[in-house]
Image (cartoon, rainbow, N blue to C red):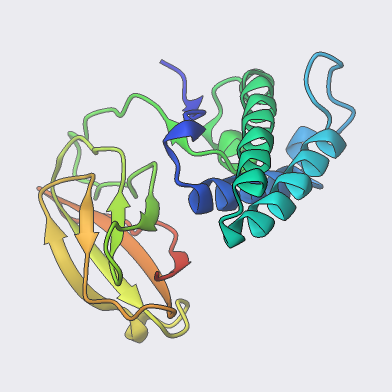
Length: 214
């Protein structure tokens, strides 16, 4: 089965959806692999960026907990979600199953993972996401389960993520989803990365993600 873009945006929290939509808009802007004009049957990049900016403004306004502003935010989120879903099949069509093209869209990916029967280390898991936990000072980490992985290592840093010595091991998990990081300092920025551990040792790290802890 060819790689597919994940479009289940309804599962994302409000803040995570804001980040994901912004990531997609930024990734497609000036993307040489998806040059405009796009076909008329899908929303243009200008339409997408306008919808995102409008939603972003409504998101910020709704932080006051005003019910009318919250209702407007929700309506604009639904409209932006529809545009993102409408665009996804076109992006997949252009990519023709090429993972190196799809990863430039900003969307998360899902695809069948081939069993690792060789001696090479495991690749970085797909679908790496970090979201706020239900309790203050917590984060939830997840990836798509990787065949051949016996466990997953998670590391964090509040320093420069490009300096290897800054990374610290936080925990190892048998699960690929609902990995809970706790005891973090609210209001601080953390970088997080994850790798799979298999029969051939340590796998490749995911690209690090940053998030402000609630």
